[in-house]
Structures are given as C-alpha cells and as structure tokens.
Length: 375
Image (tube, rainbow, N blue to C red; front, side, top):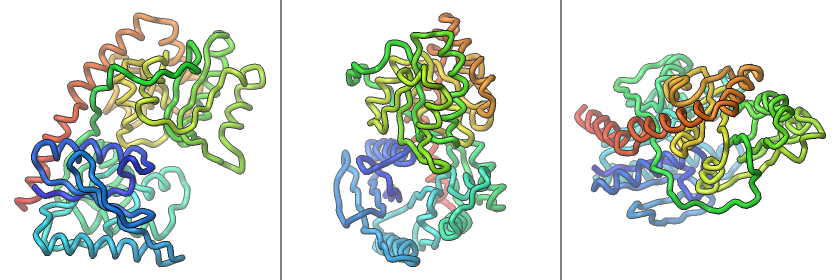
C-alpha cells in the first residue's frame, strides 16, 4: 500500500503522544514493505527521511483569522495532487486539530481517534476555539473510517459529535520494548514516585501532590519527581501550587525535571518505586504502557480507559483521580508491599508484550486499511 500520514508532531519535531504513535506505526508499516509518507504543517517547507519514510513539512500560514484555513487548504491541495497522480492509496489523519476538514477524492481516508480538543474541552467544561472545533467536527463527519486508540475515545467521539463511523475499529497504541541500556541520571533521588506528562491539573498533577503529602511525611527518604512541561494555570505556575501543597519542609524533595526525551523518561521509570498518572481524561496514553514495559508498578485512573489498559490488582492499580485519599492508599500499598510491587511489575511487562506490542497494532491497522480500500 501507498500510505500518507498527516501529522504535525512527527519526531524529532516537538511532539507528544500522537507524534510518537504515528512514528511507531509508520516505521512498522515501512518495514513491512509499504510505501509510507508523512506530511504535516510546520514553520518552513522542508523534506527529510526517517528510516526510509519520506517526511514532508508544508509551511503553515500565520495570517490572523484565515491562517488556519489557508494552511488546511494548502495541505488538501498537496494531498489531492498526490491522489490524482496515483501516488497514494490511503491517507490517515488524527482527529486532533481537524487537519482534514475537506474530503479527498480518489483515495480512502482514515481518522485515528486520539481525543480531539473538542472532546477534551467538552468534558472539562472549557470552551474549545470555534475554529478548531469546526475543523475537528468536519474531519470526523466527512471521513467516516475511524480507528480509535481505545473503546473510551470511540464512545466519547460518537457521543459528543453525535455521529457514528461507517467503518470502525479499536486498535490500542503500542510500545516497542525498552532498551536495556539507558542514559545515566545521577541527580535522581534514591527513592521516588514518578509522574510523566504535561504538569497540569487535568493530568492530576496537583491531586498527586495532595496524595503524596502524608506519604512523604511518613517516609522522610521518599521524593516526588515530575517530568514534563510545566503549565501556568489560574495565573500561576502549577509547580508553585504543588510546592505550596507539599509545604516548605518538603520543598527539597519535589523535583521538576521539565521536558525530557523518551530514553531519559524510561531511565526515570526504571528507577522509580511507583509511576502515577491520575489523569482526568486520556485516550490510550503511551506513557502508561511505557511504564508498564519498564517494570515500574503503575497507578492509573479507574475511569475509562483505565480498565482497558490496566487490570486492577494484576497489572497495576486503578484509583479515583479526583480523590487524593484513594491515590494515597494505592501508592502506599505498593510502597509497603514489595511482593505486590514485584507481581504487578512482572504481570504488566507480560501484558504489554502480549497486548500492546507493535506487531499486534500493525496487524489490526493493515486489516482495517484493507477493509477501507475494498469499500
């Protein structure tokens, strides 16, 4: 197959889960003999290669009010030209940002649902920008072949946009095995609980601090480590809020590492006592699967998609992200019971290898692509 992925976050450009997920799938499909191109909008026109994959960047239009529209029209013209020339069989686009609000003739289009801004903002009560919401709605309604990265995001997308796919499948994100040799991080404390992701309230960063306050009081050698971008919310950096929650006596035991590359994140995971992501809204977070693969016991949300990814009491523990007390109890149970921690770690590594390996994701993706091409 000749496949084009639309992605503005393809590494090494600044990226989050979508960029990493697209790269894993694109590389896997390329190794299986498919012709793969990635195209996205960025700061300048350029073309590079990534392990045999053509990576094209189209310069984004920055004109006020109309820049987003003109950028999407330019992307559509580029894709339409490739389709008319017979250079592509199938295009995949993420739901987030609504990059393909217009139909493309002469080839199939698949939307992979990761959680759009519209869905997230609807659930949090925040207002989504009307332009982005419009583009996202058009993208999912005009292109009705959907791959969702979890049952949870499929359900939410159908409910909030009030539309169903013509063809749909759930294909969870996947992770490669973590390398045995990772960077040395000598400044990490000896014992710590680890959080990785955007340091925001929606990710439960402040609830984790509340949960850790009593835990750290009882364990004077235990630290709390955050890795990820630190956001300003309600006029102040959330790192200031977290430090205030923990109090001045613990200020030297909370660490903000900022954004780290994946290998450094894995190195932190390998050394952590517990990995905690008490996020309010997720689709299928790679960071949780990576933590499981690294062998660190995981505490994740009990709300969807938590039960899809983690079997409570077997491959990790599920907690109420809105309850610092519940989080504290789950974290403490792992810290206090080495046998439980070891069992969760072993089971999680087995589950990732069996359920979330790249081969399984690629097989399911190829089958869905073939179904769309036959339609």
